[in-house]
Length: 501
Ligand code: AHR
Image 1 (cartoon, rainbow, N blue to C red):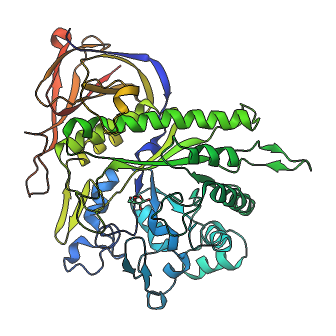
Image 2 (cartoon, rainbow, N blue to C red; image 1 turned 90 degrees about the vertical axis):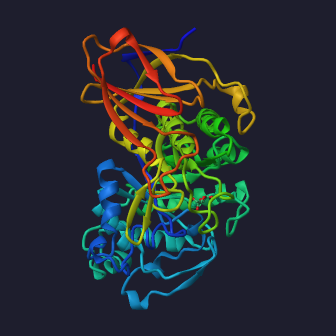
Image 3 (spheres, protein in one colour; image 1 turned 60 degrees about the vertical axis):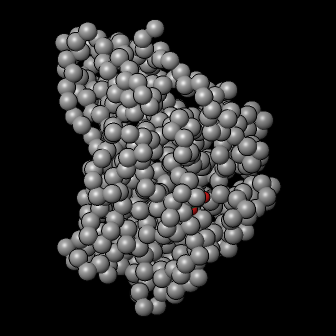
């Protein structure tokens, strides 16, 4: 039978947290230096007085990216934030062990805060759980957020920043389970350290949100760290108000395959991880007797993307040349976050400039890779509430990566999510994964007489990329009058349909 998609605008599933469109900038390869910060570029018209790339800022600003995570990633595990503040000439250069380079520290906390302001986003800082100490972490929170007459708040003032930065999001380390991590930890050691640090950090600044370092969401590490760190809030034995120590649980996953169908179905593994992780959060609540009315930590999927370090040159596999297949993979990733908006409170594409990024710079300008276009459409339009949608489509039945995806998930050729935004627009993203077939599809739920706005991202074949100097993949805009109630989704495409409800 022919495929059909029926949208139910009045059936809201859950509110979408705009933080799912967040970014990530790490001291890795060309992300910071020559990416967003390029003071020595001879093309002076590309640089503002802070040394920031104006073309990068102008590209990112219209997306209204809510949050940027910084300074890593793996970089955090040896980063001493005090190396990156104060006069440039007194900032030390240090060997950097995650990406095996030398860090000049010319870009640090104050520059990052200024850049966030320039791009109109909130900062999110990741603490050093490798070689860092709790003292250092508390000093960083006080430097950024302190309002009193304290040494570190005064140091910020001395460096020219009178007002506190009010940094809300702080991560308790990054991928501390990874064998590549400086000071890799066991789940027991990490869970206990996170508990002790979070107590102190919340005493220092109760307004912050702490992000626990999980794994991919469906692992004993996730189970153990959640169990150890999710505690009942409320009153202590002494009658003191206790805050929940942990507010979000971070998970990471990267997907990629040279096989198109494996590539575009792999993000469905993330959907499963979110489902399992959400259940682990429930289980920690049950086992620790946390009252159900206490705020449940959301998931921060704070590193996600299509990435295979083996195929990408640059700093340890950092620079991807994205294809149309990868763009469709990114569209499926974003569909996953919209479908799972109840559980996912934040997601950060890894990363935002040059490194595994939809946006590339060279000395003369920028290139928007294939993956830029789905990201732009989601950031601009997939807001408001996730709504119910019924999809009937033939399914892909070949191998998946990982193999278990096919066993636990549906893999329809049409991957769909739908939203109703606060201005009354219905937005439906349909990714046609098929390599050969356009899909004539009945569309139900469109208000009669509506003109449907259509945004299509496609290209001549799965392997085309935008890095050869030609924009092979971009957004095509058109209108659809809803005739016959049937819309043809081209093979290998992402389509956004929008209409006023
Ligand atoms: O985003 C690139 C790297 O991937 C990050 O530094 C690390 O956290 C992950 O392994």
